[in-house]
Length: 163
Image (cartoon, rainbow, N blue to C red; front, side):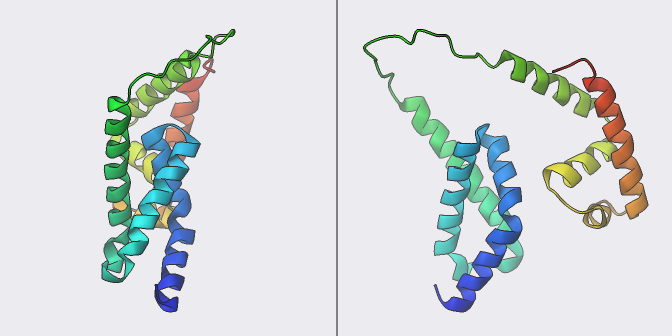
């Protein structure tokens, strides 16, 4: 990769890396797997960097991540069980507490009005600024701030007593 393209790619990774990692985590449910997924997607993107339209790079990387995740899932599905000489002595946590928490949070998100839900997703999952969210939703930054505040209050109320 030529130096100018390498600098541009590095800048892209610096700016979007955290967001891509969050998406990877949302897909895989594991930080380590998310890091592997993002690294694989960025490696594939780097190979095609010169030919990519810079306006669509973010979408391209996400598409690579989605396809890679499905490929990994298919490979895991076809893997055979492995045997071990002895079973572990202690039971591993089954994750039901985390699952219950996620279910309650998901239901609380579903109960939010569409605009509040959109603000929460764009602001906290996509990590956009209030100004960027306002541009995407076609409203003022004050509206974004008030909608986020109301939504967070509703989510906190819904999550009381859970955890």
